[in-house]
Image (cartoon, rainbow over all chains, first blue to last red; front, side, top):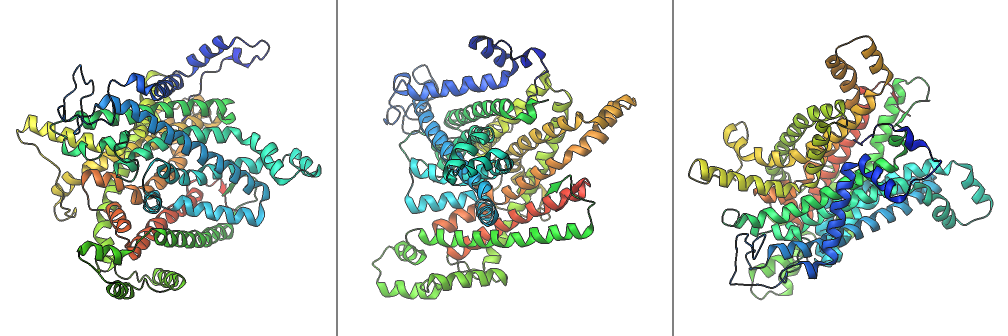
Length: 298
Length: 336
């Protein structure tokens, strides 16, 4: 699955470290797909931060004089059934996607990290019980979870984040736990215990830093998945609500009704989702190649 | 599952493993039952309020109580939970609280459709992914490999509902241009054996839309498994013997790399059974996914509980079968 770059003996010499710029260049040559992904991600972050300056129009302002306009010089991506500029909505939509993507990925992966390490560290009955709870959350249909969260707390960005974060936790916890099981057997954990350190300190200071690789791999993979899930939930009407600009929401309703008369409504937001997730996935793959020692040794 | 150092495997070790895995299914199912039961009751409102509100007119508390009594949702939560579990164990799912028809009947109607789409999507996925994954691994780090990888990462990145919208758009505009009239896939379900042409013309599109994503996941798995096997000593030996590359790839490499691929296929299939909600929405199909959404929004406790238990059971059983199959497919794996 991973890129296994051709073996290059020059890279195995730690003697003199080349400059940062040169190292970046080597990295870019070795990981062309990962570099492309990083560029897409950076571009998206740039668009999200500078959205108010980049967007030509107000993303939520209705303009009934310009309903369903085809793409033109004034409206590059056309306008939607409310006369709102599609390009501006897509640029502002990057904010929603990134906030949901990053927050749910970071929270989900981090909670999973701590729980997974704790489960491996305590072992025994706690581990067994914890694993069963994780099984339940893994098997539970995501859409029911999301529907329930939305029905209980209402729709909106925070609740979408909750609905997406919950299924991430067991996935990360499981992967981290299996790495942490190996770490627990290493004598320095026993040494730390012999020093009389508290469980919390051993887990957070001695074990967590050593399972950073699987954690970061899961984290980067989650961002893309979260953006995709947010789009699906918003498309179903269970996620972000109008008039907030969000890509999945832009596909809802308009896309099918106006499929023939205004196909650009269906095309551009989907393209934005695909390119964004594509970028995060390429970047995530490169991160995994760089961090996974099993793949690196080849 | 453990490989390696354990002593010679015996039949009984395997049976013990199977038994242990089966026993571990019980807490998972029970946990899912508890979770869905309390999640549903945390949602404000219930089906009786919904019904009364739907009639629009003024309603009195008495009617509400009668309705609740009829459906049995006035009982204590513990009692309701006990009845739910008892029904699940005796395969007596009862009636839908919303339509008042037997749940088994309501699910049966839609199960066919969802199962067919899931199977067709799986077949599409396998047909695309196996050749692509193998080629990509054999031609590693060439432009073919880069294209296949970009194609498969795009498949994971592209929301299947958007692909569905694009397919419908393409069909509409395509038929408009070629035939003069816009054609849409039919919406009313007819079983495959009753009207195969009609059935396929309806379900091939959602199967393609989900099959592409499916193929993306399995292509990546096939590629990485092939890469690992191609580095094995026995592949080098086969090459040294002067065997045809075709035979090496097909018989030595592909056969041995299928194991993780089978796992992914199994997991994705189980996911499809409960995860087609969005695709069904796009193509306006009346499948299990739609039933899920309708039941939750209608506070149809009995139906939602039955559906969740069905999907969770399919999920855990598929995982179980895949794990046990590992041992059959790869004699090196020992059960502990």
